[in-house]
Every structure is written in structure tokens, then in C-alpha cells.
Length: 186
Image (tube, rainbow, N blue to C red; front, side):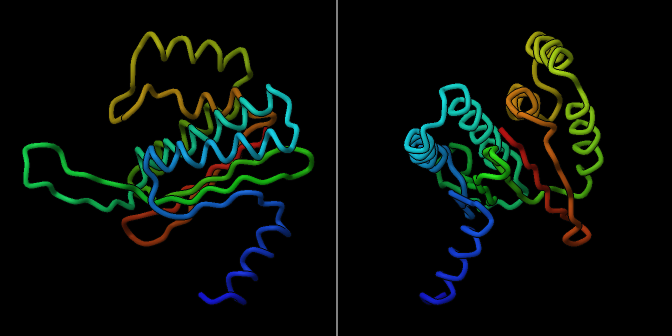
């Protein structure tokens, strides 16, 4: 991609209100570095403390979702007894839309997981803030769900921090994978 094509991509993102875009392999180090840049940008924008914390929390949950669950994985087997090194691919944008900050992320998931994820997200999205608080406490006591690589609180945290119900979608890619997208406004 040479200068004109890259500039066109930049212009397209700016027209859409995107202030930050990342597409690639994600690690905790990338999350940390990008998170620091995001905090600085929000501080420059003069975002209030509550907004800054909420946008940052949603950003972290979205990035951790990619790190833990994206089906697009690069692995390197080590010659030692330690586990293999892996990194996962995803895309994340942060922008402004109708006065809100919007965190939009996507990654590949196994098609066999789509209905389970859809059901969980629909349930969480349709809950009131009080119901989310109660479910959050219940989940903390119960521990992670089967197959979870975290505490199972990520989608709940996104819903709790969002200013309106989050949006999500799946698009079939092939017989094995679908592309999952989650958009949250703060």
C-alpha cells in the first residue's frame, strides 16, 4: 500500500469519526501500549473522569476478548516444556458518534460457538443495570463458565459501562468460521 491508498484509508476513517484503529495481532503488550495512547487522547479531548474510565474499561474488555477468544491464531511451538506461544488477530476502532465514544471490535469465532455467544449477549444486552449488577455478583461467586479463559465478566462489564445497549453481529465467513463484531457506546 503506497501513500495514496494509505491516505485514502486514513481519510475514510476520519470521515467515520474514528480516532483510533488497530488491526492485527494483539498481545497484552499491545493492549498496554495502545491503552496508554487512548488515555492520553481522552485526556487531550478533556473527557470527564467517568467517561475516561468507562471508555478505557470497554476498550480493555474488547481487546482481552480478542486476546483470549479470537479463532485466528498464530502459534509457535517451543522446544522446551513450556506451553506454546500464541497471538490472536482482531480489529478494534474507537471513534465518536452522536456525542458518544464508540468502541467497536471484531474477530473470527468458530461457527459452532455463534449461537452460544449470541444467546449470552442477547441476555446481557437486554438486562437492566440492576439485573446486570446482580448477575455480576452472582458470576463472581460462581466462578468462570466452562470454556471461559477469564472470570466470565467481560460482556457484563461492557454492558454496565455502556450508555446504551451494545450492538453485536455475526457474519459467516466459511463453513468453519464467522466474524463476530461488538459495538459499545459510552
